[in-house]
Length: 136
Image 1: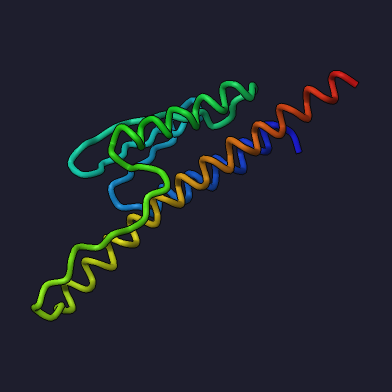
Image 2 (image 1 turned 90 degrees about the horizontal axis):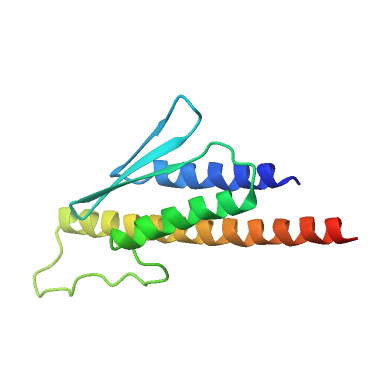
């Protein structure tokens, strides 16, 4: 698999996952770049990723920018969901639905982190393979 195919595959998965999350908008620009506008806890950040990049270094930098953006917004990798402490009052259906929505959003963001890490690992492997092919 070529480097661009690896990048395209992981970029597609990232876009699909981010598209499912409320508060994330994405636009495909004229030059093929994908611009994400992420709103989380009242903060907004924007990050752009090239639709196709030729060098592995550039591809990894783009996933790194996405990681930095998520961290800047307070979306931390590897956390576990801790729901609010239950009160003595029974949960209403609205409260249960809000808690389920909150948990789903949390899990969606953690899935974005997993996709980013898998993409970076895959790109590292492709880089090592290309170096070994050039060497031998």
